[in-house]
Image (cartoon, one colour):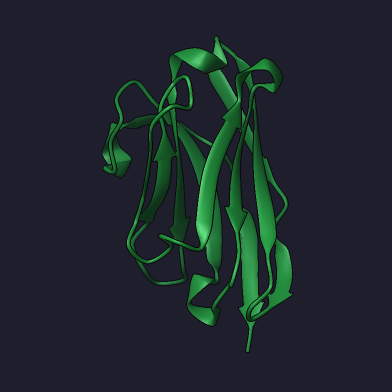
Length: 122
């Protein structure tokens, strides 16, 4: 089993930056593809970014491309999402998740964190 705990969310003004962290425990962290998703109230969970097991390959959604960077430190069992130039539409609960394949499909992710709230004010 894998336990995932997100942190780093909060309130930030438009144009500001946040770095979200996801700490993993349990099974070997480096064996999983890691992804970030977000969900706003009343909306479906949305893919944000994913990173391969060794960190050599990443993919980001068009909505955050150029503003967000996903990274991982396997020695620390942690994945990060650096978000810059934040917009009000980035407001959501952000979740990290672990999968066995590199994918944007939420159903393919086997483990999920509890989420951390990101609120971007105008």
